[in-house]
Image (cartoon, rainbow over all chains, first blue to last red):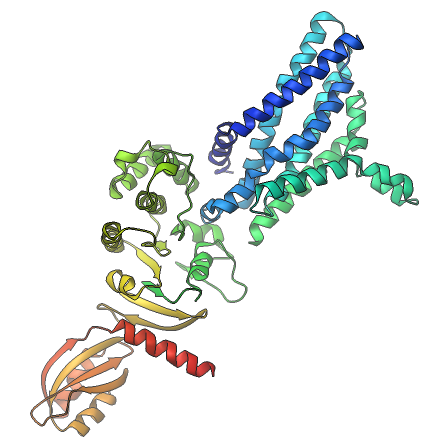
Length: 233
Length: 281
């Protein structure tokens, strides 16, 4: 893991020196602020469930844009050749890129936490669902990042990487709907693959280890496949 | 060591396998005794690699980039800064240390790429077509640089231009369609050599005597044979000077002169590629 830190620093710099990061954060905060304000003045309820669901849907669209350049850009510009011919292990490269993407998402969630602070100042919200909602969003975004990173490693075209990762994310979000058409036991299998099925308990304040395990499994599987993709070359 | 071959002959593929970027589909490759697949990490530590299209991180400044690459090659804080400064000094990059790589000319980018390859002091430096895209003055500077670096380590350099290889390499390997056609010495070494020998004696007997020397592969007379003395061009697959002189004098012929003959790289290349084409038929 000796090379992880220099690789991570390089990735962080690449993420935060690009205007894409600031455009994404600005648009995300604008949309979240709009919904939060509406919710506060129209519903007058001290909870963030709708905010969590809106953030989750935004992440389905935003995370692929954050991850699209991670490996595709290195492949297109040829710098992947430079990295892979240095004495660096493939998993160090993959972990550094994943961590850089997750750092940006964590920053976005930290900024979203301002909504919870406002609720805390003007009302007495139930904090349990708020904490679990943020944890759920973080896990969902982590899983989407891992999917995006894997797809980014398979192509040299960033747009292709973003579109495919977006497609996979959206499909995984709503794949439970097709479960109604399938016979037993396929309906259960398909439903348990759905992002929304595992995210809803978090957003409503119910913590299950199975949901946590699901998101961690998706992350681990995609990261391992990304390492394999780099190692196969 | 130069790797010569027409475009598409497999030069870059071989370099990428040696540098650890590609895995061979068959066979093995070793660097300093380390298998490039089984001991990939250790083998990569022995290699400094400069790819043909010089990929670099355009958003980084020169010193920042070299520091990053140095850390990846295992250099740590006390020695890293010194190693980066030395590499920049060697490649005359000091004045560009805070310039973004994306703003550098092709010549400077090539120098930055070589500077990063030198970090960690690798035993083998691999340069893929290092003079591609450079102007004539930069090409001359690059040749001088390659020659100056060669004294300390092995340099494997590729080109599809005969003249380029001839100017920088001591030995060349000729490649066609992924196959090695031969390895030849251009300057003094124990590899294949060509000698020009002036001998007094009967032409037929002299030829027989020369051909019997172990290692000699071809004997040709320069011009018409004469009784006074004839000049022969002898090709051998190893160093045969001493054995040749002993054989000539031992058989009672007069050895008037012997000198290394320059290898006609163009003729050699054409001969080897023609042989390969004929063999393929």
